[in-house]
Amino acid sequence: MGIDRRRRASLALTLNFIALLFAVSALTTSYWCEGTRKVVKPFCTGPITLKQPFCIRYNSSNLNDSRLVQYIWETGEDKFLIRKFHTGIWYSCEQNVNMIGEHCRSFLNIAPSHERGVLWLCIVAECLYIVLLGTGGILMSIEVCHYGNVIDGLKLNAFAAIFTVLSGLLGMVAHMMFTTAFQLTVSLGPEDWKPQTWDYSWSYILAWSSFTSCMASSVTTINRYTKTILEFKHKRRNIEKNLKIKQKLLDLDSPDQVWDMYISSVPSTAEELLDLSSNGRKLSNTSVFLDLNDLPDPQVEEYC
Image (cartoon, rainbow, N blue to C red; front, side):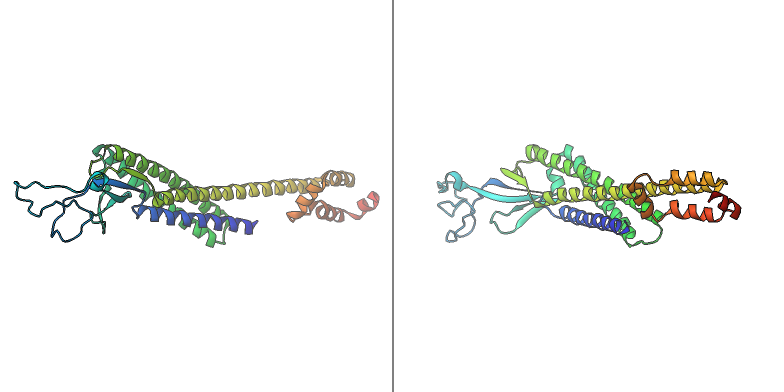
């Protein structure tokens, strides 16, 4: 049973570590959502001899002369650029016009003003999620390395389960708040940011994978705590039962009463016999024969 408890403790600690790693990776990256934006090409600058596919070329380099008629050769979809972007809790980054490098800005400034409070709550909940998850992991580590008092281990187990469950609930709320805030920003955000197509990316998957691993760790911890308590209660009932039988045998003086008590205390089934022998309490044989040997000689002879 001790080996089984340690295996469960190691499993819960491993799941907690995976959840913490995924949560930190998701929080520090900006790939919760990815997509594309369709923007108009800017006007080309510089010498005409340079080929610039990411801008609109005029048929003349004298842009300041209003008497000249300028013709734009790009038509249809050629006038537009498809720029990729990715967004996280902290930043939203978009490709530059020349498709080299990225330009990032705070997602808090992009979101509508009435949604910024939700984003701040999302950030606070994510940070608390990681803190509580780490606290639960520390308590689990202490319990795994603690081989002393079983009661102290149970206390650590209970607190670790509480912290892990609370962190999982906070993580779920934080992820849902970000999802809602991002969708509202797509609908009501500034025109220079609104995406044409978008979808959730690998950071978002890591965040929900962290939540799943966190809840699996909490369930394992609670299951181990409950199983240990039930084992203790079962052993306590067996001890109390055997002590009552022994006390009744000690209170009896007559050999006939001792024999009747011996017959009534013999396990009726093989399962009860195995249960008593497995717990190291072979009471039905040893205690009775010891009591019979302790009786005075005349009574023994008369009994025989």
